[in-house]
Length: 83
Image (cartoon, rainbow, N blue to C red; front, side, top):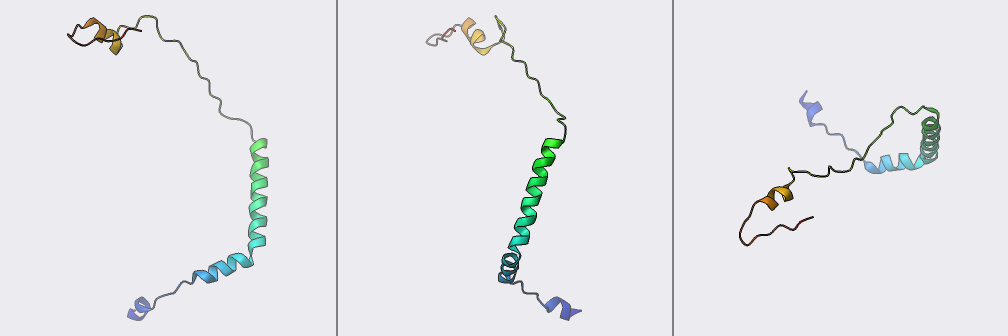
């Protein structure tokens, strides 16, 4: 059992690179087939989700805003600009 633990496996990355380069046509062919299939599938599937957003204008008088609260407080030497 000690022999199995002490025996290390070397990984040579150059061998993997040679393998990828040797089969590059097959890899590229499968890549482009997948891209075309996903492209066609994306147009064939129905749309499932739609989003609707409504933008509302702010209320006319908002008493709880920070500038309105500070404008009512009088602090000597400090002035808050109005709208």
